[in-house]
Length: 388
Image (cartoon, rainbow, N blue to C red; front, top):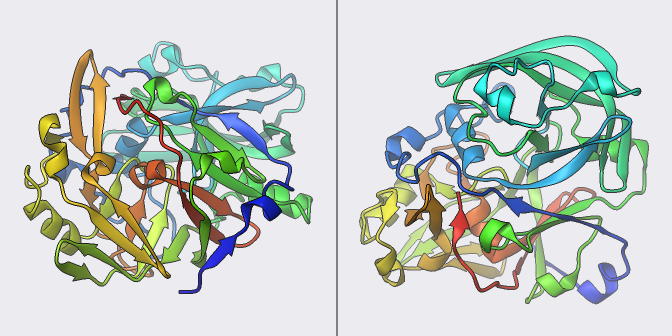
């Protein structure tokens, strides 16, 4: 695989960029051991072969619950400030609507978008319903002015969630999800892809820097470039193998004395963990002190072996301290395994998902113009306890 070394001082210091601070949610009401059942967390049919679209499965909703690095965007005129999850694994902008009944727990406790307060709102006329085992969401589509930093679209499609059943959105600490993938099938054209269509020649990239400090202090999303202070190694870029998800080709995965022929990795800011196919993860789990159980004895972290990912001519390594999450939930401290089995089929069979576990160690930059993803070793912070 061809590698591209980017000279930071030439490219990125000369490029104007914006920085959006990201926060991590404080404790939720969800006990950290509530999701200890590994089978509950397996995502089936993650890729829909007909639509090539990421399904809103119950497992992905669980991902969002535990992946809440979030930042603020502005919607409407005058602008309404709303906290959202920036998700490179989906194209849509989904937001709770002020028309959602306050009698519903979810709608009563979250900040919502109020289109009646916006002079630039227009009705779209379409409705949507999504049904899951854990509940459902339903609503209607609107168009309004949306701004991410100084990037603004005057009529961008919004999925307003009007009805919620079950626990969907209940444990969210944000108002919605903001898609940063490419367009997937017949989905909405994502915000920055539409921005490029309306503003040809713009430099659009988004770089994620995650910390593990309390509340995610110091985490940031950089758009249009980034501050090289946050990277302590050169960036190496890898071209996408398909232009909907942020999917790259990889050489293999090495674990202890074994080599696994894995060809793809999906880089996804909407996934908190690192996932892989059964044949890889089961082999890894059998060599772990806890045999792959969700809960980890925090005193044993140094006993967990390294996992190596070969991409191009580079090797990216996650040690036990990287893939074990040290968390605080409901006043209790504990540790969770940040690995999960997900079997993905065609067109990227047995793909890994590089979620937050990988992206915390490696500053990740998504280059929309160049259709490539780059990694550099991220500057480390000192505090490792993550709030859930």
